[in-house]
Length: 189
Image (cartoon, rainbow, N blue to C red; front, side, top):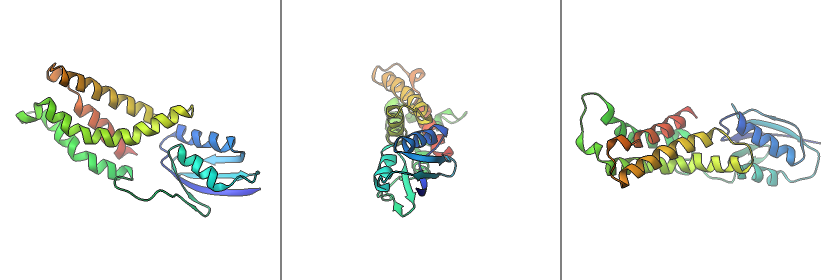
């Protein structure tokens, strides 16, 4: 029986840990312990299934595996951490929020097309992370909190986009909500 200890990055909630736990048990692992807070994962393998294959399976769930001689094949890329994503999204979110400060009136910020242009980078980065994670978690039968984040952000974005295209006025614009949800959750993660 082989004892395996990994660090798994990208787990943000108890459902993430449950997803990893269920996957490892399906692969024949015993005594599985998954801690979503620090990413510690330990288990015992009774079968001779290659660790590389199990690690790739965990990565297909949307997480990164390190430890026990295994290092994730994914390289550090632009916006690879939630802190990087937060700092990228923050300036766009702040500018989108300026029109909400009492006494501050910047007329061009009330233009829905300007707001759309400002929210698009945040929405793309956010959905690339939260949307992917949400789809993977639903596909694996254990929805995580990223499903709620993706749904809330997408609803605000689609509602605002509809208001912009149909020229319904400022009462139908919630682009700052989209940006706030994603930016604050990146900070929280």
